[in-house]
Length: 521
Image (tube, rainbow, N blue to C red; front, side, top):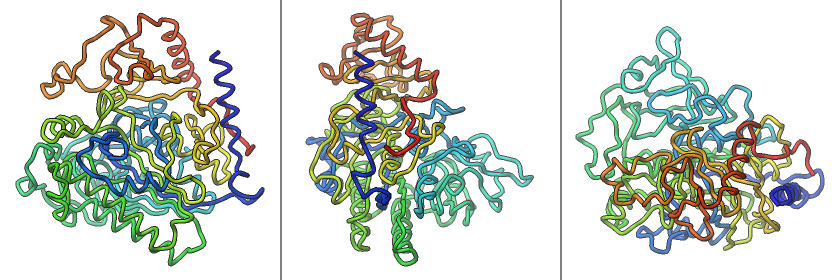
């Protein structure tokens, strides 16, 4: 049964010829804009949650004008591994330190030299590539002796010689240009912008937290060194300005050339520092204002694309790197009746659905039918294979090992499941993996895989009874139990065995893409 199902899946995957998009030998090369939100939950977007307390009209518009995926997942339940997987099409647990979350000047890059990335693939096919915002895949800073700075915290930042070039950042992995931050912009010890491979305005003083907003969503701001041009409440507006400049410059200088823009927002990662003009606008507190600002920025990017005459040939993808942060879930539920994880169990760091089921919206005029919904099981790793199928790029065997093309779904031509299974990793990396096949989901560990509900007073009210005490793993039927309330580990031993075997085989083989696509069908 399983073998037949996988064979059907492979046949569907291979039935996504480029010829669907253009004449033979003339592949389509649409512009590509990927907007990645940070810690935005499935329930934070009103087109996914009819009880959301923060209107998201621009994201709702994107859904009306394109396709809304309802079973899309981040590869991990935290920032760094997900961003690695989006850039490479490979699950991060497969590489050394692939469960890490970098802070400050943390590195080195998780992306190995020579590893094919999404921007490198596009650049090789004639695209101009730009990255704006939060990188967070690791890079290397150097001290005055030219030695790599290792370690976290403010003392590591103090050791950096900011006159030296940085290594392992976006411009070393396929991007022509980069403007952004190494890690979480307003959280992690170093408060300074990077332009390409330099820090043009180094940090010069300690951050004065007394001048920052005080509210329950402001506690994530660590002490650190800040540059004089780093406005803590304006970061996302600065990112918007730089993305607009990239688009405008591209149209002026290379109007006939396709481009890829990766816009990685600060929002809505804590601390929730909305710009002054957005404060009080949502009616749902500081975090609601931050969600409102994010939605406005998405609208501003869409308007820029339209103003420049690019919309008809631009594929826009909007998604998030994982589920909502614990602090925002706790306070938004209690104070405003807003549930950023609704209708799922769990939140950021957890292996339950709320930790990695994310909004995923795609607009592509003339190709993706407006107002459609896809139930295809998909992952952010799939962006790379999907784009490769669109532009006619061959994926070598040692690239995009966990990426599947969802092009048939986008074109409304899917006739069955595209993926044989889906992997996700929680905060514990390779120790906290899950595998999903159809409606069966197996967690290869007890507990959430991330948050400690028993010892966290804020999370304890959301702790559910253990229905399989002593079980080394968890098995849920998401069709009959989408809330993951009943662990069927002991009741369905054959399903547990099948999924555990499949997971172990995937770990051993180093891939989940069953047959590498070495040539266009």
